[in-house]
Image 1 (cartoon, rainbow, N blue to C red):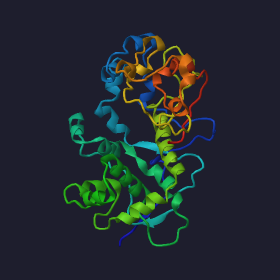
Image 2 (cartoon, rainbow, N blue to C red):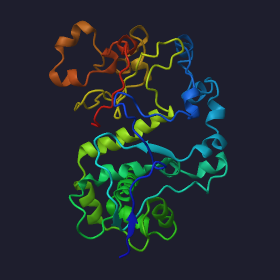
Image 3 (tube, rainbow, N blue to C red):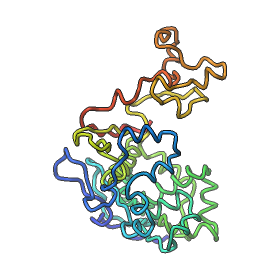
Length: 325
């Protein structure tokens, strides 16, 4: 069994938190900060356009996201959230490091990559090492596997919907496994077994997974890929936005029970049509009928019952990352 010394994180691998805790990290020279969204009237007028066509209406969108413009910016670094203990150098059986996408020379080369392959080339996940290493109780014992290697391997299994046995089969593959091992930092001749993955996942608390999501979201905000305030032209700089890493602003145990939900459910009230009722189902009820719903129905009511979302836009800066549900 071979091991490598995994050193402390460097400034080239992460985005530093500002000294003022009330401020968010930022990458000032990121070109994505210069992108300005459509005004509200134009946004409403183009509501029926597919997202791919609508994005083309944003000034400098195409030139900013061309591969030739994105490649010099790589890797996109992430943030170690506040309160996470720093990584202590130790020897590990694997060592994740971001590798340049030397196999991508133009946009056409991206067609051979799935989403997981692409993010491995775009993002440096080294910032997740101190987060996932919180399960280590001490520096004693035999060399473990790099927490980032195990964490990304788990994401790969989730993405592909593989069992642990299927993941190991792919990692051991002479054709496909070499590429995965190289990007995840594994030694092809010293791979973890199923029990290692199960124990690592079982020893990882939910709050640490949330911190990984926060790390990614804070990194995207630092580059300007996620807004930290309203991007509508003419809006006050103090007008904020609310963000949730799992699409929920509050912790909930809701279960979506309307199989007919679609984009029309979230239009302004006067423009909504309930697809469930059109199919002869219960669907949405008039506001005055809400008291006839049972507790279970109230928790899973059709989104057509929701008020106009623009009525609840936060008037002041409010960037929040809710726990993953």
